[in-house]
Length: 101
Image (tube, rainbow, N blue to C red; front, side, top):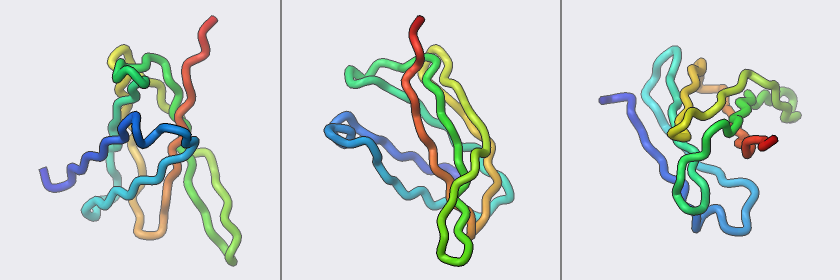
C-alpha cells in the first residue's frame, strides 16, 4: 500500500506528558483516511474515547485552530477519520477519555 503509514505511541512516551507530537508524511492525495487505536496504560482498547479533530490555520503569523469534526472509538478502541490533504494544512487530534456514568 503506497499511501499507508503507521505510528505507535507507547505508554512510555505518554509518561508525564499531556501532548505528544508525531509527524506523518503521506503521498499526495486529495483525501486521506486516518485510522488509529486508542489503548490504555495496560494496552487494552479504550471504547468510547472521543477524538476531536482540529485544523491548524496560520495567517499573518497568528496561529488558530478550527474544529473539523469528531470521532468515537469502537469496542476495539479503533477510529477512522476522512481528512482533506493539503501541503498547507495541519491537523491536531485531541483524545479524551470516555465519560463513565
